[in-house]
Length: 295
Image 1: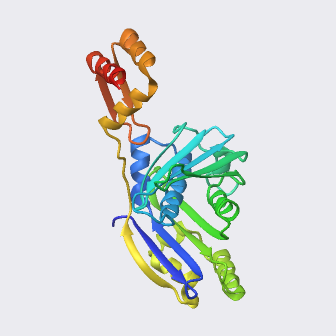
Image 2 (image 1 turned 90 degrees about the vertical axis):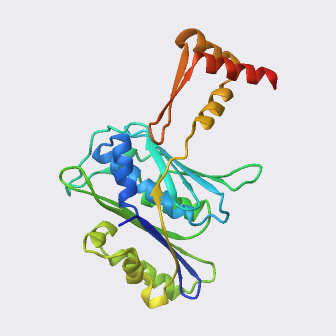
Image 3 (image 1 turned 60 degrees about the vertical axis):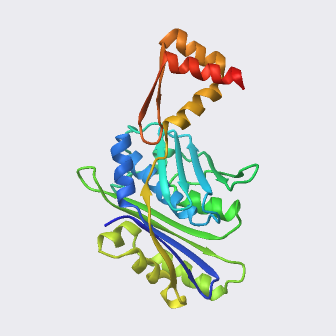
């Protein structure tokens, strides 16, 4: 089944809920980047979080970028999503060795780090993008998303993200949910959300039991009048192109392009998000320089 994302409300519109199943997205990311187990979970959680946050965007052409930079060996994590939850991402060090905690689970915080920052950039088509910046609080990703939303956007939020990996390293399932309360929410509704989210099993366990994301949201918000508004496909999608790579080269400037001509007699650019390679001959580089000079 294709990955999907749900938009819902509850408690007469005072609660916003977004849920996503992202199994195929994480499988694709693992394949593209040849991710270690730890990197698969860390990037997978961030891809899911990016898809969830994309559903808070207002405009069809809006784009959200999440940058997580901790002091662990994984390095940085970057995820980009459009408003339709088409996501892409990468980690700096995809082969980072796995860390196992005392429960036999991957210890993601040991790879990401517990000191650093989360930076969320929203391109809303305005002159300047919105930029939200908070410190890293756990390195386990979900708590860091919740902290960002609560502190930077000032919307109290619960975030749950999970990636379940089989013994052979393949992705069994992946998903997550985001629940946000609006200013006029009733205290008893908050109590229900806190009680339910604290008591239900992890998302990946529920998905393994055959539960749908609708089922999971209903387990949490069913008693408060859950209303499903949209269910849409989400996927891993890179929109890189030769034209975009040309613009990247031009942005380097004439001197650097001429250095490539002199030293390499051409250029090879690799997309961070999908690893597609773009080759530019010496003649093509010189034509780019000519275009710069004609402006």
